[in-house]
Length: 398
Ligand SMILES: Nc1nc2c(ncn2[C@@H]2O[C@H](COP(=O)(O)OP(=O)(O)OP(=O)(O)O)[C@@H](O)[C@H]2O)c(=O)[nH]1
Ligand SMILES: [Mg+2]
Ligand SMILES: [Zn+2]
Image 1 (cartoon, rainbow, N blue to C red):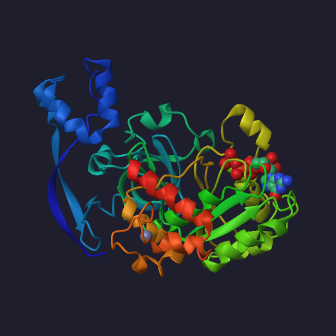
Image 2: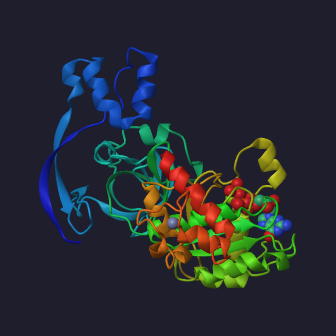
């Protein structure tokens, strides 16, 4: 890590301010973080002194990336390094390198430094924790009073002082902000079921785009092979295999394909993602017997309208590596993607793009579009082309 120390002034976020005057005011403020400053100048809701709470902090400025990262400096003698096992609202469960487990709150400064992230800390993050001294708990009671995980009631408490730069992330856009689902993983296991719920090919393509964006190797896992005839899936399997995506057909129920899946996971850091009810937790229970992850019937999920797995949690594999089980997603909107970037997520488009008549062709309506021509000639499948259109228009909306 090449970095240098620097002092900066940070404006702390006013997340504990007094209630504002108008009810709608907060809504605008929360929806449009970017407008927050304009609003402050037009409506005075607090005493001026409170509006500008600044603090000078020592930070490391890392210059390796595109934009310099600002990280609070920590004293390694006072803090311990660890990995976030899971996040419950304001509480993060962190396993230190020495094996101790801490229930942690996040230092408010980190929230002030993060600009457009929904969550400052994500499962898989490498963090620095300042252990609370038993006499004066650092979290000031917030940790214990916020409820959360009773299984960790006896664990130590601490404060997350710093989050290390991430590599390999699964990210999505959530209400105009970045939602990092998982950090520091090598590969994304896209879990789909053949039926119950039905396979969603367009969602696969969104995941492939998200994997490429986050620097993850994608693996397509098609579960519940015991419920449908996989022969009909040959074209789909062939398509993804051609795109270089390993495809694993499996069944958590019968155990078919579980060995192959285990081989994909061995020694690597992976995340399982997919719709609710496709069998992510069931597969992990089959891969590592004894895990005892909660699973629920699809009909029960539909009736209740909620997911069985409710937070991303990191599981160590006894054959090497680790995997994060995540809650089901309904949709996946790409974060920070411009419409013209979307074609880059469709590998098979690449040979044709330079042949379009217009150099800035969006491949949506233009005459002389080589992509549309390739679709007509079945060199690109209509399914992939429609996925492209969906992502193109989706990112244009954001
Ligand atoms: N027939 C069959 N059923 C399966 C298979 N895998 C999982 N199921 C069933 O599918 C249902 C949902 O499984 P879960 O493992 O809870 O699904 P999930 O993807 O973890 O769902 P969320 O946690 O809500 O995201 C359960 O009733 C499982 O028993 C399979 O291979 N075959
Ligand atoms: Mg689950
Ligand atoms: Zn074109």
